[in-house]
Image (cartoon, rainbow, N blue to C red; front, side, top):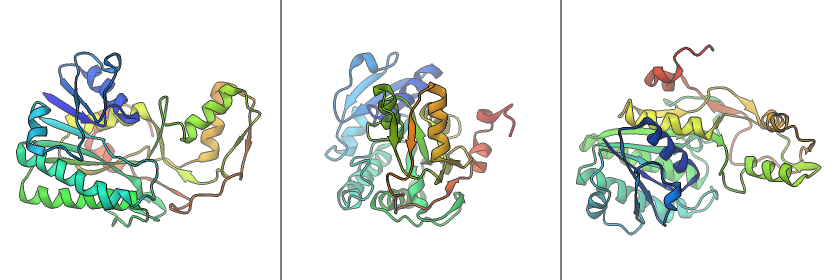
Amino acid sequence: MKVAVTGASGFIGQYVLRELAHRGGLEIVAVSRGEIDAARLPGDARHVSLDIESAASTEAFELLGEPDVLIHLAWSGLPNYKALHHFEDHLVHQYRFLGGLVRAGLRSLTCTGTCFEYGMSSGALREDMVADPRNPYGFAKDALHRQLSFLHAQQPFLFTWARLFYMFGEGQPANSLFSQFTTAGQRGDRSFPMSGGEQLRDFLPVGVVARLIVALAIDTAGAGAVNVCSGKPVSVRSLVERWRAERGWDIALELGHYPYPGYEPMAFWGCDARLRQVLPAQFAGEGR
């Protein structure tokens, strides 16, 4: 089986490539806009440099080696969720690229969405809830999901929409909470400025997220919309306190330094019932 991964040089992409290589028996095509250091490519993975905003889709499918499966992670303009670029410019390029690949012969597509598609809904978020995004990034992702769903109804292909919640891990962008805290601790800072930390979110280590994305793409292709989440609400404060304890750092949390973000509710997390239903092997033997 040949599996192509767009956004392969990104934070999640690097972990997805490793997970695919760990599985073995797959022909991996790593796709990115720029070059990737060969040392970062696992196993016999092949790299293809491709800009989805300018690529002709028929040629792109051939350039990718006509993959059986595409794991689509690429998205530009992040982490600025409020930029109009997401729907004014990038959305049209995303659909043109993916729709063109399907029409050229792509049989299976796993595309990453976002918990921001749920908008200001609080509590446990389920896939059957009506999407109501409140920032441009969430709006564009929801629009792409709808566009691909219309295409799927007219030209069937195996389609999975993996809604990602919050993740953390090594290699995360420098402006992420995890990277900022890690940098502060390694510098020996005595305090770490952050929000009040009482907001409840859904967090997973990025390695777990990558494993679930790959399982959705390879083991149960065509699952539709699925939350990639822990299913457990955790406060941001307790998460940072856990990181601090794990590292044994003596660093005070300067709570309330930053305001809470206004584009998301105070308490929301993913319902993981469907994830467990479509990927039972991933949770076998786990106590709840």
